[in-house]
Image (cartoon, rainbow, N blue to C red):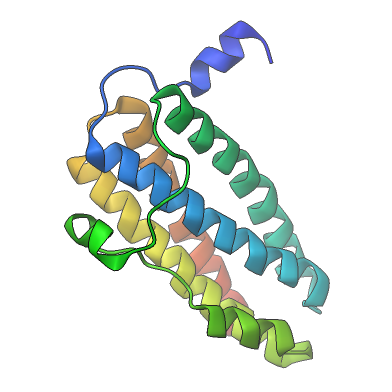
Length: 167
């Protein structure tokens, strides 16, 4: 990566606990989302769902790398404390439960697609909620801009998945 290109993805400047918590929570959230879309890439029957899953995989894989880089630059852990009390000031740690992922892994055919779309709509809605908190309380310019992009792209994905659910 060129120096100019790398400068674009750096989150320099001041940051606060909301910026750090947002990125840590989003890394965990993205990793869980990646688990779900990778299941969809293999198990979905409709090409539209496979294409959506592949696009999300590519985007969120890049975003995870970027967020981890920012946290490392800030000398902060790239993982999140999963204790619920650790996130009380930040709206909690929304996550899809292990039992929901296990059920998704077992689903086949049209039942898989329905389960995936329902689960992933809720998952992406959580991303939008977390982004709104960052936009409101964060101070880092790049992290706030990233949160805006997350809000917009995940809202679009939710609309697309709702359309897929009804087709």
